[in-house]
Image 1: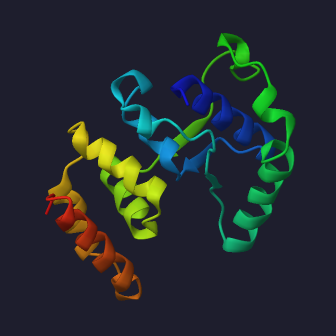
Image 2: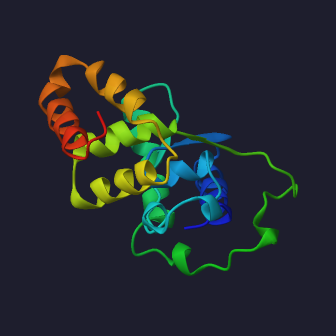
Image 3: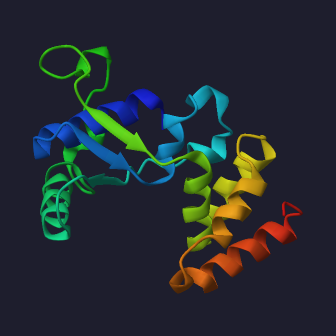
Length: 164
């Protein structure tokens, strides 16, 4: 995925829920820090965009997320839409914000899931020197006790990689 595609998805999500900002929580959040040209291919392979609405409570977040999923989610025509410079908001200027996870926080989340695709994603960023394994390790050690098992698994993976 390219940054312009992410920006288009953020604009679309914001327009669907009629809100000025959303949070990008999946692997595409790395495009908030780096342009796709600076990233290894393993970091831009996913075409899925995980967007979380910002709202006052969990029920409203769930409702807004359902709206986004219903209009632009899997099996929708959104993926087939033309994406170009003319996809800005109605005013033609930037008016929507997609807050992206910090690059090391993104790696922490990916390593807690520890699926093969997550390992490949984080490994590629580490190999390219785009994220700091010491920061990732420190943040893993700071996770709430309810995530202790996932954090320990992630730290073990980093150790096997020779990263911690």
